[in-house]
Image: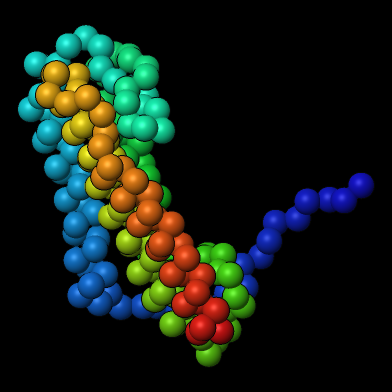
Length: 171
């Protein structure tokens, strides 16, 4: 029987400075948290007891639950933001699609930080949009999520494809 062994991190550990774009992306991801809590807090008292909690592939609400679901979604959004932020700050733990060497480490880590910063933004604003639309539908001001959810999904997929393609080019 094979014994599981912990993988030792062998990627180079280098200290990266933050560039302007990375700081802007961090700020806008944080702004998505603020926007979400403001929208939820301002509308929470006016919401009916049941709100949409699940949407079909066409964007129509197909399950309903308590309005406290919004608080759980926000909690998940915060945890996801914090995990991604921690990952952005610790590039030596990245599992890159190519070998990380002393020569390419800085470029690969910057690429990874940029990609995770984009993912942090996309998911943050996607959670905001999901909660905003759930509130509007619950208040009778909409019927479905609309096409924007597909844009968020497309952006996430494009970011991952970009990361892999650029990492292979760098290696």
